[in-house]
Image 1 (cartoon, rainbow, N blue to C red):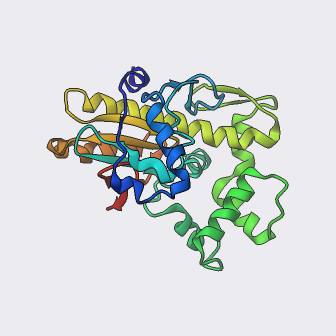
Image 2: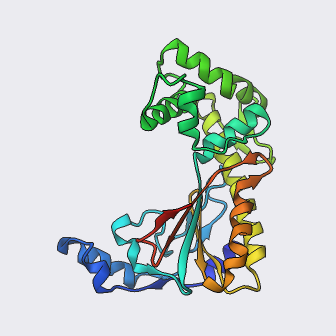
Image 3: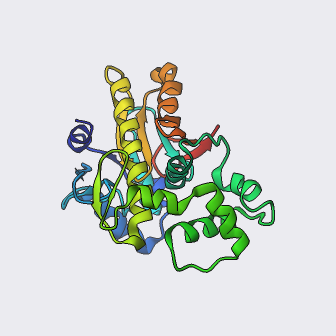
Length: 266
């Protein structure tokens, strides 16, 4: 029902001087082409094995739209509010490893202290090491890093629990044909995305009867076309994304007058 509602509701696209200033002259013709395309986001919820959404032919290309052009997308109401999840897939995997994830801070900042004992003090470096180790079984890393990562994430234990040698079966009973190399990717990605979509469905139920509505879903974020009169319920909406069956998933919140001018808020 949520997908059908998004599919049927056209975006509000508007080219104005503010947008034009952000775009090089050589790109204006490309930008103008967005205004001539279908203005509905038409999702296909069955194309990818992990459950991630894709779009059908002749849909508005929300997934591969250049970020320079996002300011053309305006809210029907007062603002856009975007809710995405910090280290989304990694939190899902951590939850599967330890029967719950309740880390309130940024997960990569947390990892510098609790996995790398402050030997790494750069967030990007910590993130790259964790992602490399988790998804690339051939990646060579220092033994002390591998030992720490195994202690926290229990990669082999999770793989053996959710991969039977030919397919992955998630906690949501989604079955995905997979070799060993891709099994961890499917386990973490699919577990998160199905958790996230359940949260989006719950948010949609809350918003029904209100002026605000879910404008679209973009990877691990939910973009709400927000009416200021609905301020009393916005905390409940954010809470639904953070309190999941897998534990606490830290939300990042952005707000903006169009989709190109989103600013992070506490």
